[in-house]
Amino acid sequence: MSAESKVALERKLTIVLCVVAVAALLGGTLWTVAEAKTAREIDVSVDVCLDRFYTQVEGAKEFAKTAKGLLVLPNVTKGAFIVGGEYGEGALRVAGNTVDYYSIASGSVGLQIGGQKKDIIIAFMTTSALKQFRASDGWEVGVDGNVALIDIGAGSRVDTTTVKDPIVAFVFDVKGLMVDISLKGAKFSRLNK
Image (cartoon, rainbow, N blue to C red; front, side):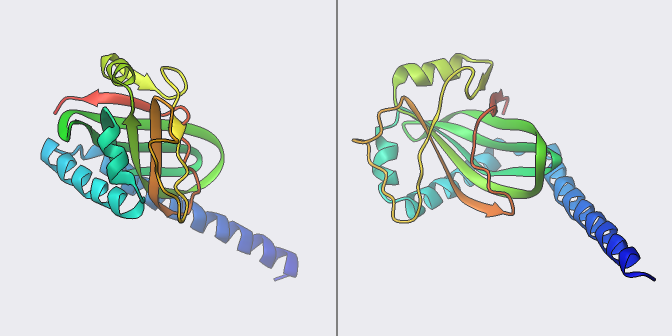
C-alpha cells in the first residue's frame, strides 16, 4: 500500500470514527429528549442546579434574591455534526416557588461537531420583563426580548449594583467538547406538567 493510500485510508477512518462518536452522542441526546421528565424530576434537578449556581458563582444567592423570577434550566444538552440541536427542561421560580415548567430548544447549521451539557439560569430583574415572558406562547431570545449574558469567569462576582439589564442569563458548569454559551435563537416554550 502506498503512502498516499495509507493517508487517505486514515482520513476516512478518522471521519467514520467522528461520525460514529457524534451519532452516539446525538442518539443519547435525542433519547433524553424523547423521555420527557416529570414535574417532580424537573424540580429536583432545578434544586441541584441552584445549589451548583450558589456554590460556583460568588454573590449568586444574593443576586437571585433580587430577581423577580428565575428560569432554571439544568443540564441543557447540545449535540452537533454540521447540523446542531439543543434541548433542556426546567422550571420558572418566583419567590422560590415553581410557577411554570419550560423547555429550551434551538437549532443551528454550520461548521460544528461535538456535544456539551450546561446549566442556564435566566434572571428576570423587572416585573414587566417577567410578565412579558410568561404571557408569550413561545419566547425567543433576540426576537421577543434581549438577554444580557453575564460572564462568570474564575474569580468573578455577581453584583446587583453593576447589572442594569431587565433580563440576564448565566451559563455555567459547561461540560463537553463544544465551546458555545450563546443563547441567540433559543426558544422557550411552556410545558404542560
